[in-house]
Length: 261
Image (cartoon, rainbow, N blue to C red; front, side, top):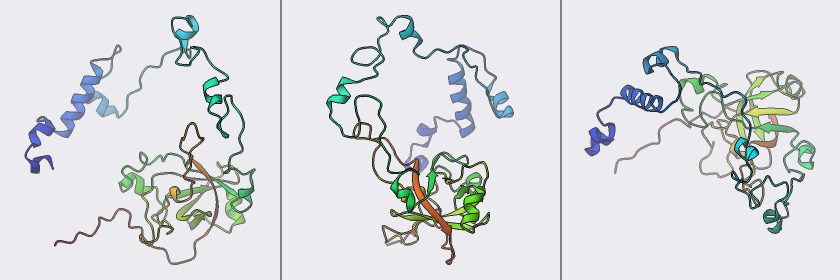
C-alpha cells in the first residue's frame, strides 16, 4: 500500500522484513547488560531464554527505605483500607477487601438453568483473535469450530462424544463449538478460548447464534465494579447440548463481496 501511495522506500527504510527483524533484535541487544547470541544464532535455535534475577523481593526499595521510596498511595504506605475509595460510597466496592457474590458462579441461582462454568481464557493457537485464519489456529478447530473442552462426566451426562459440534448457550446468546473431552478439566467446568472471529448465522439478527464459537455472545457486558470497570468476560455460566441441525458454514474468514459501481 505504501508503494502504491508513493512512499514505499520511506516506509520500509530500504529494509526487507528479515532485515527489519535483524535491526530490531540488534537494537534491543545493544541496550542489554548481559550477552545474547547474534540474531542468526537466535533464529536458528528458535528461542532465547533470558536470565532470571534470583532473590527478587517485591517492593524492595520501599522495604529498605519507606520514607525515600514512598508508594503511590495517599499515605505512601501499603494501605489495607482506602479512605478515598470508601468515600466514593459505591455499593459494590468498599474501602477494604470484601466478598461480593458474583452473578456468574456455580453457587448462585443462575446455575440452576446454566450449570456449567465456562472459562474463556487466552488461546494457545494465536494471540487473542490475531491470525485466527492461519494454519496453526485452523488446525486446532473441530469441524471448523473453536474447540470447547469438557470433563468426561459432563459429556456423558449430555450424551456427547469427542468431536461433536455442540451448542453453547445461556439467556444472552449462543454459539457452536467443537467438543474435546478432557479429564484434566474439573467437572461442571468447560473451557472455550477467546478469539474465534465472530460469525453470526444471520448477520441481520443482533441475537443470531455464532457459528464459529466466539464466547463474547455469552458474557455480560458489565464491569467488575463501579470503581474498576475491568473486563468480566473471562467466565460465564452456560449450558451445552449436542447440535442436531444442519451445520451452518463458517464464513468468518471469507472476504466481503465487493461491488463495483
